[in-house]
Amino acid sequence: MRFDDRVNPSGGCRMCLAIPGKIIELSPENVNSALVDVVGVRRHVDLGLLEDDPPKPGDWVLIHVGYAMSKISEKDAKEQMRTLEMLGECEGAMQEVRGYGLPDAETEPPA
Amino acid sequence: MKYVDEFREPELIKKTAEEIRRLADPNRHYRLMEVCGGHTHAIYRFGLKDILPANIELIHGPGCPVCVLPMGRIDDGLSIAKNPDVIFAAFGDMMRVPGADGSPLEHKARGMDVRIVYSPSDAIKLAKTNPKKHVMFFAIGFETTAPSTSLTLQRAQRESLRNFSVFCNHVTIIPAIRAILDSPDMRLDGFIGPGHVSTVIGCRPYEWIAQNENKPIVVSGFEPLDMLQSIVMLLRQLRAGEARVENQYTRVVPWEGNGAALRAMVDVFELRPYFEWRGLGFISQSALRLREQYAEWDAERKFDVPGIRVTDPKAAQCGEVLKGVLKPAQCKLFGKECTPEHPIGALMVSSEGSCAAYYNYEHRKAVLASSLSVVA
Image (tube, rainbow over all chains, first blue to last red; front, side, top):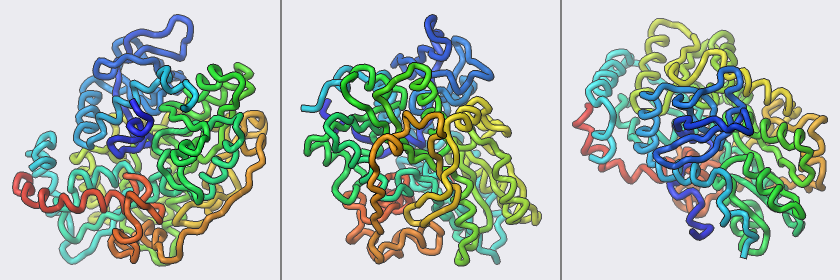
């Protein structure tokens, strides 16, 4: 993927995006990290903002810039995904999730 | 037919739209401000203005972090990254935002090491994989995003990461609302409160708007039904002569906010005495900077920052649009010199900016008009 293609394809704003994901497993080596599933894409997100009410595997969370920011119900998670779809933000959201953890291409020095 | 008939529960939308018509006094003109840029985007995307009666006017507020960032801050951040040992890391949203001497993307084309990160914690990862370089994360956003930067900085300190810093541009929403309410040419009847900012700060910080300014505010979700329901709640209060803070978005926003997020922000950040907002000017105590104990990770302390100031062209009437005095299309430059491809003013910069949203969706009006029969 070219650099240009990664910039904001949907025109959406990362700072306003909240992406629903399901907690798959908590990281054994880091209490504040969990593997989440967002429509089939699995990435690690940070749970530090939910330390007062930590989510368990199977719980749904809203993710913002790689950090789970609130626990939500499964029903609301599905509605949130639908809202993103209606807003034309789905592609941008999935691109963001795929980008968590820096794919190798992004850590290479620029050409 | 693309948008309106995709709405969830079209019957409920129709009922809510009818309720709005019933509640709105035909002899009164209502000016309601949606504070959040995400709401602005959704209002245009869904064509909500066309569902509302003509005497309910939605004013687009200051809640687009990219739009309100003064151009000089981008130039300041980029000037640090002119050092070949520095990597400029930022969210994709920032990449096309013009500085006086080009956007981060244009600087990358000229050889600057500019990287997109999707999470501030990935800027840490970038620092670890590039130990001989210094990674400067260009942080931006309201209270939704600032806690993530806080946790990232706490981690950098915990791990004694030396080749990482943050150039902090985080701003806070309440002083901006206050500045708008203090403006003499402003007249608003109520506010649609920001959804995701409120997951962090909760609903209490808005109480002064109700108590001191006598304006209702309803924290709202982003679906069409959420926003219509929030307008119903505002109209009910206005009709009863009340001014309260209400929470329509209870499925996500707790009244008290997110304690862990607030603690992290308080640990890492303090208020700046003042900060410049594009379109609004200098606002007291409206932005965050790193506390002394995080000085080692503060790009503004570590590097020489030129403190560049770039004034917007006089002809650009961003401030008036931001305060709702003018509609986007009433600005002299709108759609002519100033377009989303070549933004001159702040509000054309990001798709959440009211001018860009207006520009991008206005041409769909014909499509929306034909589909209105579904809900109206």
